[in-house]
Amino acid sequence: MEHIFLSVLLIGFFVVSDLIPMFRDENREKKAAWFAVPVYAAALVINVLIGLGVQMEMDPAVASFFDSLLGMKK
Amino acid sequence: MENEKIPGIKISALIALLLIGSSVTVGGGSWAQQDSWIAMAAATVGGLLLAWLYSAVLRLHPGRDMFDIFIEVTGSVCGKILCWLYVIYAVFTGAQIFALYNNFIQIVNLDKTPTEGILLISVPLVAGLVKGSLKNLASCAKFLFIVVLLMTGSTILFGLSFMKMDNIKPILGSGIGPIAQSAGFYLTLPIGESVLAMSFFSGINQKESPFRILALGILFGGALLTAIIVRNVLLVGAPTCNLFLFASYEAVGVISVGDFVTRISAFIGIELTLAGIVKLSVFTFTAAVGVSKAIGLKKYLQPAAPCCAFMAALGMTLYTNIQSEVEFEKYSALVGVPLQIVLPLIILVTGKIRLRRKKKGAAKKASHTGSTAAPPKEPAL
Figure 1: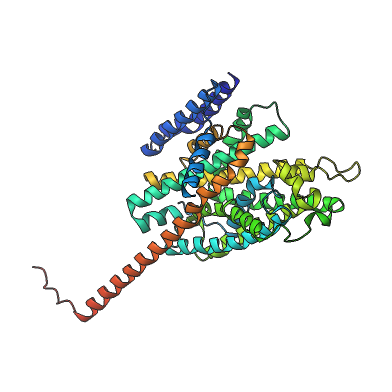
Figure 2 (figure 1 turned 30 degrees about the vertical axis):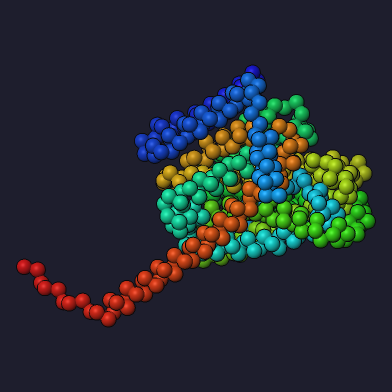
């Protein structure tokens, strides 16, 4: 729960300091605002899943992919 | 980019800190054992070839950064695909650095501090540094490079009485094969990461030579890393460096000068903090510029904060533990080769061919216009 709380705090800080001013700016570039939203959402989802104990480390999958690639070449 | 012309020396300092970055904590443990310093020196010299390659790419279209050049040379669709490729590379490598950063702080010192607590401070700092503009980042880098240089020099100076020349002997004793293997590894990680420095060059005075800027940065960074490896090997020996995850921290830990100078290992933590923040800022800057060019934004640093937040989150999903992070480095080198050498070479060749065709076309047009004079215009009624 501590992880989720601190992660929400971090993303919340960025939403308040970066995302909301971006949407309020009259001269805003829509593309920038709409790029930021899914990226912040993805970062939040990753943090929440880690906080809930979901094992999502990529290194075993990537390592076995490269090992099989190199193994095929041999 | 905004009209901010940055002196080349500041960019060289930025590149040097990019190379030093996280490598300041390791050093000495490689296949080459006691000859690791020779491998790093060789990689630094090899880095000059990379500097030539990147500067040749930048000279295709002076005053532009690498993303503009990708789009100009390969067209809009391919160029944007290349932009996204380098954005993913910058984000992934930045995530690795975040992971190393957190692990170092937790393993060495603050083991009860949660990772998120460290990120709560470092992520806004990096995002703020990048959003402050490249000029700000480069000015910080120039100052911080001197600080890192002085700290490394201090550890070498204080450690002189603890160094044993026998630790570095026999020179070339590990054989040419392991030295070449280590040199090749160092060339991709960290020297080859200077490929991302090509994103700075639209902010630099066109009169300055890109090769000089890149070469100076690689030489400064490579020389400092070589000195760090020599220090570590002389202090504790190569087999001991191989035993520890953070060889520099352990090596410098043996230094004490009476009761006056002790726990000098704190210098390594400070160096990692300073150089690591700059390295993360470079990756965030490159990712932000790449995203801006790919999706067509005018304010090129707007994506900096989301990229940084995502990088930090990704860093927590990369590795099961610190040991697998270290073992994964060999795959990072494999991923680096296409992006650091192959693609820039393809861009250079393609760019040269296109420029030659443009010149030929322009020359043909000029000669055609010269030989057939246009008929005089009839006055309008």
